[in-house]
Structures are given as C-alpha cells and as structure tokens.
Amino acid sequence: MPSVQAVAALEDWAPDTWRRFPAAQQPRYDDTAQLEQAMTQLAQLPPLVSSAEILSLKQQLAEVAAGRGFLLQGGDCAESFDDCRAPVVADRLKILLQMSLVLVHGLQMPVLRVGRFAGQYAKPRSTDSETRDGLTLPSYRGDMVNGDAFDAASRRPDPARLVQAHARSAMTLNFVRALIDGGFADLHHPEYWDLAWVRHSPLEAEYRRLVDSIGESIRFMETLVGDALTGLNRANFYTSHEALVLPYEQAATRQVPRQWGWFNLGTHFPWIGMRTADLDGAHVEYFRGIRNPIAVKVGPAMQAEQLLRLVDRLDPDNEPGRLTLIHRMGAGHIGQGLPPLLQAIKRSGRQLLWCCDPMHGNTETVAGGIKTRRFDTIRRELELAFDLHADAGTRLGGVHLELTADNVTECLGGARDLSETDLARAYRSRVDPRLNYEQALELAMLIVRKHRQDKSASGGKDTGLPLA
Image 1: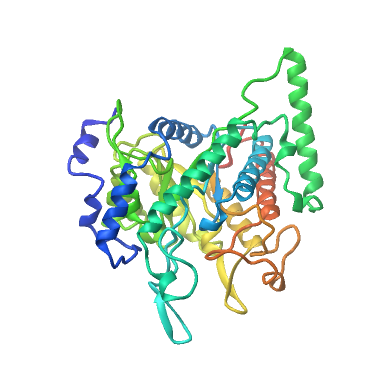
Image 2 (image 1 turned 30 degrees about the vertical axis):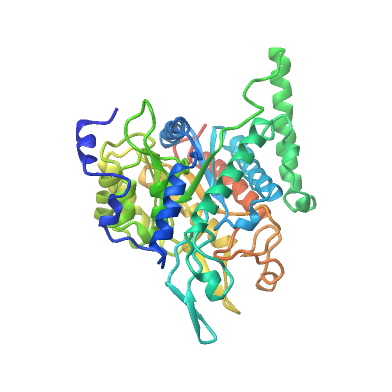
C-alpha cells in the first residue's frame, strides 16, 4: 500500500487534471465535439491490459533494478496502421525473442522483454508544420493523429484515428498473446524464430552455435531430471509506448476492483518523452497519478537538480519498479551529461532502473536530406554508458532500441557495412531510422561481449553490467 503522504499527494489528481497544465506536442483538433465523442467511445471499450499484468511487470522491473535481470525494450519507431498484419507482428516478436536468447545465454540471467508496439502510433515532432513547394500543412504525428500523405485531408488531425489506434493495438496484442500461449516462444524450438532473409547473414553461424549450445543444455538437463523442463515453452511479454496524446491516455485510465488508485489500461509500461518531461507540464501531471510502472527519457540538457525534482514528483514513495530513467544523450554528449545525473540519483538513495537509448541522440542527416544513424555511433554510446555506470558505482539495467525485423537499410554500418548509397534501397521508416534484424542481433551480441570483457578485466567484480 502507498504511504499516507503519497495518497495525500494524489487527492487533487484525476485522469483529466492534466488539462490544467501546459500540454506540449498535442494535436490541434478542429472539431472538439468529435474528439469528445471519440474519448467517450474509447472509455467504454474493453481495456487492452489488466492491472494484474501491470503490477507483475512492476515487480519484475524492481528485480531488474536490483541487478537480478536485464530489460530489453524495443520495437518500431512509429507503428503504422498498414503494418497491423500477422507476418509483421510475428517478425517483431521473433527479433526480440532472438535478442533476448542471446542476452540470456551471455549474461546468464533473466531478460525482461518489453515491446515498443501495440500502441506506438504517435510521435513528437520538432515543428508543428511542414512546408513543401510553398504549401504548409500540419506535421505528420503518427497514424493515431493524421496521415503521412502530404495533402490537407491526410494531415488533418482526426479524432476517429484514436479509436482506430486502440483497435489495432488490441489486434496486435491479442496476436502476440496467442503466439506466446501457443508455444511460439518455446526454447525447445528457437529455430522457429528464424527470419528467411537472413539465412546468409554474416551473423548466422555465430547465432546458430548459440542456439545449438542452448539446445544441448536443455536436453542434458531434461535427461538428468527425466522429464521436460517446465517454463521453457512460453515467455512473459509486455507492451509499451510513449504516452503522448493525452486525450487517448485519459480515456484508457480506469479504476479496477480490489485495487486502489488508477491504472492506464492501454499499455503496461508508458513513458514520457524528452520533449514532454517538463516538471510543470501536462504529461508529468498525468503520469504522477497512474499506478503503472513508468519511464522518462532523459537528454543531455537535463540538470541534476531538475532530474531530482522530476523523480520526486513521479515517484514520491521511492517504490521499487515504479520508475525507469532512459538516458538518450548521444555518443558525443554522454561523457559529460550522464555522470552528474548518476551521482545525484545515487546520493538520493533512489531504487530506480537505469536504461540506455543509444538511438535518439545519434540521428544525423546525410545527402538528400535522409535521416540516418551510424551503427558504430550507437555502439559507442552504449559501451560508454556501461563504462560510465561502472565508474559511478551504478548499474545499467537495460536498453531501449528502435528496430525492425524487416530487411531495411536505414542505419549505416553493421554486419553488412551499409553505406549511404544503400539507404535508398530499402528506407521505409516514416519518421526515424531503425536497426534492421542483423544490426539489432549484432548489438545484442556486442552487449554480451562487452559484459564478458569487463567481467574478465575486473576479475569478476561489479562493472555496471548485470553479472551472473
């Protein structure tokens, strides 16, 4: 149960009190009656997740924060309504399962899988409008808000899209659950997770050796006990998204029987983006009142005192599993920006979870105005993050990645050493560049190698990486 102080702090909170505060990154709907109608419809639809699942995730996040696990959070930059198809959803699950298999084997500890999908239909933008050939229209803010096509009808923020986003989130989540309950994640058959287009990948041999090693270990243990090992035929899986469009989040916020407080039942694990983490803003006001585990993106401009005030507002009880801080500094800024934050949180005695997003701080624009990210820069920020946590005596407990199982060419470098000329071949993202399957799997392998190197160099002492 919460403390008396925490309950008192929420006496003036309700799912709509965010409306009293400045709300950044919100669509400008021209028909408020249509918006209210959509919210009423959403509030009457069945929830996407349960309070029991949310509280279970919070407990598991507390275990990760205590050093007894590792968080793998990943998925699309911005989901598309058109990609709500069985093969696309299955492949997204496959890559996260394969990455987690690499991490479980290499780190020798549980991996908590959280998909960045089943709700990631909205994106913040740097500007409210976009101009092409003298025509200015609202920026594309994700399929939950408007369409990508550059015409007035498509770019109009449409409240009906909120209901469509809920429906596609439900279909995605239901299919993921059906796959997992049906044995899709069975460790006896990791070969089921293969993706056809990478059968000749430079990483195939290394991954195949890992799969064979795990299979041999399972067969050996089952021979010893004389029976099949339980718990290997399914995996816990949770969803997350940036809770950006606040009318949608408000409509998903409900009270449930036999539980105190309010839950956002539209996702297990919502987060606040860097652009909406203002202490006096509407998003912080909304997030402080829900019981979900929550995360906040932290950028290089964040000051230690500012971060401490934000943490106090969002997690006044220092509740295990409640708060995750996802730093996204950029490889060129992390060395200066992260250490003061680590030291401030450490001195405060907070039990929160630190996670690294090595993607968003490393976006650049190349010839032709194409946004991309370099694999080597992503890797460098991640390796620096582990080193800086080790130096500070804190623990980096997870990664947050934008990735896809598709054979895209959006990030430079990686196993096939993609160049700028490759970008035009298969660049499909509507917003930010994503790691493709090979690059994502390679990053998981690099985390394991970094872990082993640091553990060997330190003689098995704590290095900021989770140790067995």
